[in-house]
Amino acid sequence: QVAKLARCDGDPVNRWMMMQRLMSAAILGIGSETPVIEALKVVLLDKALDPAFAALMLSFPPELELAQAVPVFDPQALRLQRNLLMKTCADELGQRVLMSQTQGRLASAPLAMQHLCCGHSAASRGNSLKYFVWLSRCVALMRI
Image (cartoon, rainbow, N blue to C red):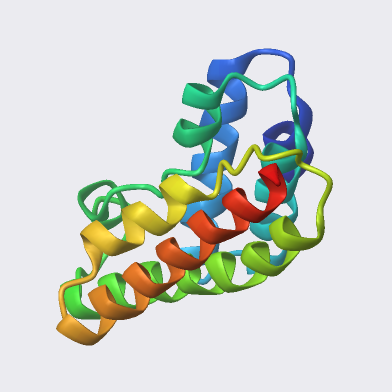
């Protein structure tokens, strides 16, 4: 039910809240990453969706909000799980965006940028930057 609402609810605020709930469940181990990827895919392929709203839909819940949902807070484990979901989504959606008919609209760039900004290790930031550059090149190729 939550996954369906995150994909196609007519109320944008409710749709965003359901996406946040879906992502939180996957990060906290309550849910699977597959519904998150499918919901993000719908956002990426929706040409009618406002780009600012698409970027908001691609934003992962902040760590502070996630921390409030767990009885015992382990900041390192929480960050690891959040970053792992972000990377999994970026890897999966990057391939789908490249093969999709989005006609130059690449909404997953905010996802890569968010991962770039959230990565704390040099290796993580380096991988995110490479991914963001790759996405930018995909946009350029789609526009040719």
